[in-house]
Amino acid sequence: MDRRIVVRLAVYPIAYIMWGGLMWYSQILKPIDATNLLMTLPLCNRNFYLILQSLPTVVIEFFKIIYLYGFSLMIICGIAYYLFIKKDFLKSDIILIDLALGWLFAGIIYSIIVVKSPFQVGVAKDLINMKYFWIFTKPTYEIPSLHTAYSFLLALHFKDEKYLKYIYFTLAILIPISTLILGMHWIVDVITGFIYGYLIYKFPKTLHKKISEALDFLAGYIKPCIFCRNCSSQNKK
Image (cartoon, rainbow, N blue to C red; front, side):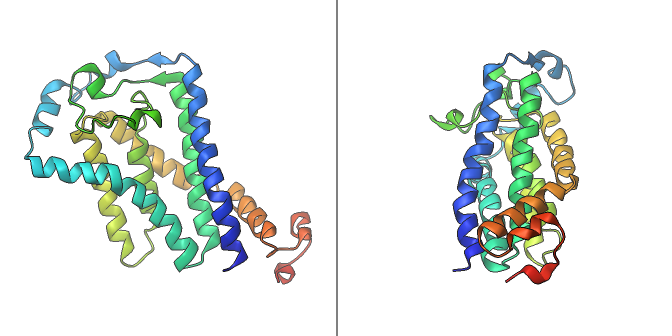
């Protein structure tokens, strides 16, 4: 197996744990709760969620699957596609780092201002009802919706893929809808999530390239002198 893949298989899980950890620091702070202010906005009311959650059971179950599994598969399969199939290591690194930066910036936002989810304030029902689900996140991590932001971010990364882009953009639409139907997010969270995902996608990739080069260096693919910037690509083995 290519050493560059081996290095990334070792580093990626560590990075996942680290970027998840960056989120938890905000839990020791006492951010401003803007829930009451948000509930004065259009579509942020009980009637809106009554309509959504009165959909047929089969529709509700479909969106449960989308919410619980579609989101995770977008991330895992997206990185794996570029890492194993296309062997575009820079692209897989960029996606992972974009996700990490998304956690970091969102953590800063959530440490300043939070909003309780619709089901927490009785506006909607919690149709997920997973016993351990909130161990890994908090229902006050609402604005922006990271489910929305990341699904849109992944879709943008796949916009040049001939067939897969249709799958990714479809999921980028269905996942935000699922967060509303299941009572997880407000319409404001979804709108800001799209904006947030786009901003992360457009974030300068200088840092991403340096980290990617560092991973190639760890794999022995780039000689140490690459970091002095005085050598050409001929240094690659």
